[in-house]
Image 1 (cartoon, rainbow, N blue to C red):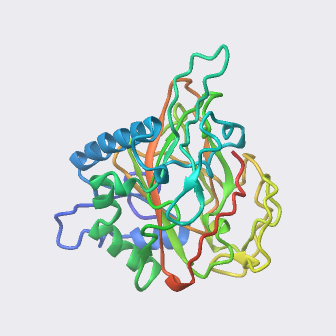
Image 2 (tube, rainbow, N blue to C red; image 1 turned 90 degrees about the horizontal axis):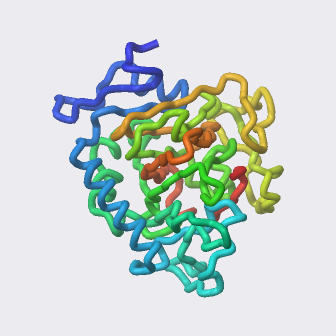
Length: 317
């Protein structure tokens, strides 16, 4: 095991001669399917990300930015019955987009409205765009995935600002077990990796990521059986992973414990990379007034021309 600041945590010196030549980093990623990069993004940049994302979040809530930046597809289905429902307008992909207000003015409720998600936040935040396209991030992904890598620019959800809260009124408190490739199992864009920039440090108090190290090497089936009863297209790949090895047990449909899983705790400013085939889920916060905010998106190393709009909502909420 390489000498690191914590399991999978690697310190990056952006001013070093080769900031990415950190002993053990690439080997750890390929073996375990994730790394936490500490120091790659400057604290001042994280401050800007926070300020700009909060303003974007307020803009979605107020309706002062395009409906393109709201999100409903990721929310718990219980939170889709909103006052502005039925006012959807086409977004840039021809699909309907609605202002995703997660809290309703229910009788007897004093909860204040907010939004869990802002899609395409890179269009509203220069700091997010600078971080998501940081030359060191892109170069590291090239080394880890091989060849050229690319991100969905203007398509899909773009870069997403996510605000997870534990209350009953929240449309996003946790997410069940899944691997990212299962959301687009028909496409040839894989392999890929997700990046997450942490605005808040994570803990049991405000929630954290659960991962199964090494699960990216399993041939994880497409989500033919899923808790949301979403139909998987007939042209979906039967499985995704770096080997033909079957998982030792089926992926849970909900939030159950998985043998070998670990908790990943991040500091403010940490940049998490995890493989698109890695099994992961997010735990709900235990502190009622906690928030867990981050910015996330994905890079792909497969056939860019094969991309088309697809999202299979298979994970439990």
